[in-house]
Length: 283
View 1 (cartoon, rainbow, N blue to C red):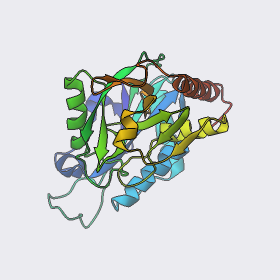
View 2 (view 1 turned 60 degrees about the horizontal axis):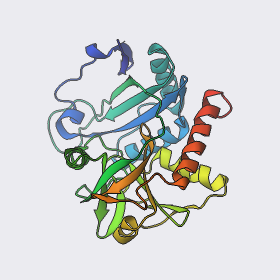
View 3 (view 1 turned 180 degrees about the vertical axis):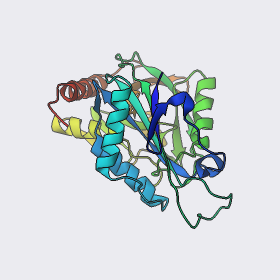
């Protein structure tokens, strides 16, 4: 039975409940993070907590814990669930209040953390993706729990036998419904720059850092729809899916329709990082 954390208490997940007047339930008024755990070690915790704090600042909600308190709570959830490889989900809402659109006079945060097993990802044989208009709001850099737009966009992909929807806004690639996007052309990798229309991924950032450290070309740049459709390789990245190569887009092959050599290099670098994390060679 999974052990969760709710407002300072560790308890079985099945016993964790919040009142129906919680603003997270009523308005989607909250933010979240997903943190992979490898051999009991939290993946890039400082970066996740920094992004959490940025999201909280963006919705004008105070951070209920210090970084040290977050680390202690998260590490105990990992330990309570047996260590090993896990996927940690944490959520902070503005708490329980009378249903009014404006902020309550007093904030009583709801803080929730849970764990799921994380199955180590084998190298992918390639996935299908579709393109869709980006119908979401204009604050996509906030990791909001209000994910209906992404849910609808991912569902359209699933219904077409695809793994993801790659989103377009005014002729430019933003991101996937729940992933970041990389496009590779002539051996160079590109990903859309930080801004209000993408959620900067921790996995995305590690890929950029690792490739640049290995003297592989990887840059932030705006990507047009034409550049997407003419790419040699396309990747989708996220904390739990790692790096997925897209071999078919809108029913047409990407490049030669096979997994690319640049993806293999990026995949190897990512796996090397995980090995170093597990061996306590890095924080």
